[in-house]
Length: 211
Image (tube, rainbow, N blue to C red; front, side, top):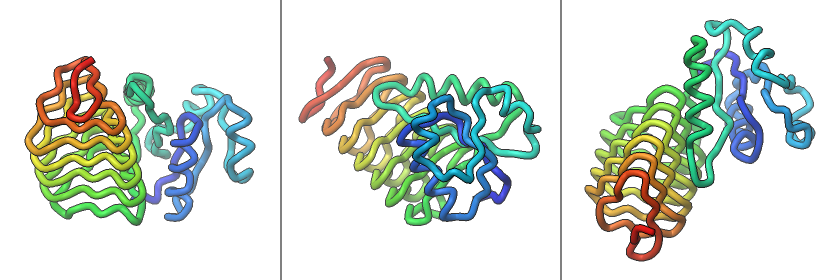
């Protein structure tokens, strides 16, 4: 990872996990932008608090990297909105990788991708812009994960899967090989996906069915 100082956007559980990853790699955290003082009280007091976007704009885009601390439960829309807004102002987002993640030398992580503890990214897979592969999730060979996607903890993606932009794949979901997951769809926690998922749809169950 880069040694350029970072600013974390947002608060909540995902942001706290990112703080841990950054600190164990001795990445300088210039500040956390959050209006949530309850959250701030639960983190290291040595981290500077930025209360608004205006505070971030005081830092030149070429002097810091941003880390998107917003997670997603059902939709990645807010996370995508924040990313695009700061990109329009000239900022760059750091790619964050936990040291315990296993990533093939032939995999590609695009700007702002976040790979959490114990995650596996196999050969010739691509993780898109601003996407999360969460704790112990597995992305097998030749998968194409789009932009602003969240693969939640423990999800398993077999080989050759295509996941379009804005998809949320829930905790513990399983997707068999070669499946296409349409944009802005939601795969519920624990679902077993055995056929194509249409865009903007919600699927759940074993085998997964559209609601």
